[in-house]
Every structure is written in C-alpha cells, then in structure tokens.
Length: 109
Image (cartoon, rainbow, N blue to C red; front, top):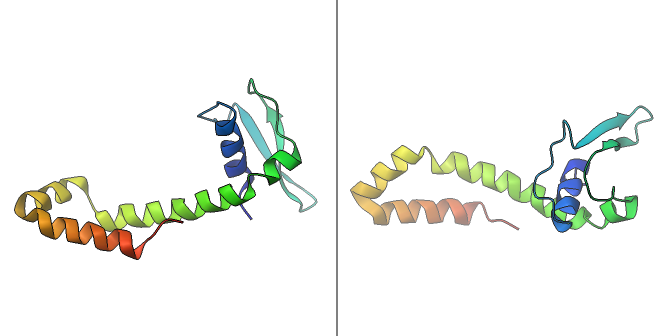
C-alpha cells in the first residue's frame, strides 16, 4: 500500500499542482487509532481529495514508490558525476556498458 503523501502528490499533479510542501501546503497526521495517516490541514487552491480520489491513485503511487527505490539504487551504482566524466573521457564504451548494466540490473516498472 502506497504512502498517503505519494497519493496526494499524484492527485495534485493530475490537478495542475506540481509541487506540494508537506510542512505548509498539506499537513498529515497519524491516527491514534492505528488507522494510518490522514489529511489534517489542506492549504492548496485545489479541492481536497476524497478517499475515493486518493484510492484511485493507489496503483500509480505503488509504481512511483517502487521506481523511487530503483532510482536511488541506480544513483548509488552510477557513482559520482566527476568520476563518471573521467570514465567517459578515458573509455566511453566501457562507461556505456557499465551504465547499461546498472539499468538492466535495476529496471523500472
């Protein structure tokens, strides 16, 4: 199950808001009954999403979260950009092969 914040980000993007500040725009709070997070405060110029609208984002949010893990893994495997530039200068074909291997070993959904 995807995080509420991810579903809210996708809902906002679908409604023309590209950036959500979870300290000011939307404040989330965990329910003391163990039911999970909920929207405590909504300060955006678009309508606050209903539970049904957030549920509709579940599949896309699951994919986004899985791809974020892949992006993080790839970023670590790619290494420092300065080292990559040096590698490209020395042997661009070897660099291409290494990057392709990283991508092949860490596919996005």
